[in-house]
Length: 155
Image (tube, rainbow, N blue to C red; front, side):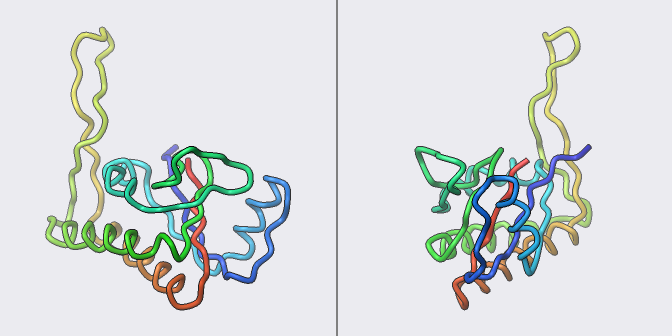
């Protein structure tokens, strides 16, 4: 099963439920859009995503509110938009120059004997990657215009 990061665009006037399960359900139910991005792509871009100011939810407490909370929820709001848009537009420009099949270097995997290993080769369809980035950039524009929020639900 592939690991996926979900991004939900939620209107600013939505009231979210108070307990964690209902909170996540209310995010999904009230969202006006959803973008799914494969974990391997998020990991590839992660160093630059750490530059983005973000907020934790009432259920998650992080010391440094920058980037995405990998395992839990992250709130991206008006404070996040400038940096997040710049980062995603940069990646979009890079991936637009790629061939139809994008091969990215992934994690280092040890062999069974734990002595040798190699880097994973993660393959993505260029058009799918660009569509996902475009959709997330469109979410950012909605946040800028209307004060909505983007909720990231980690793996």
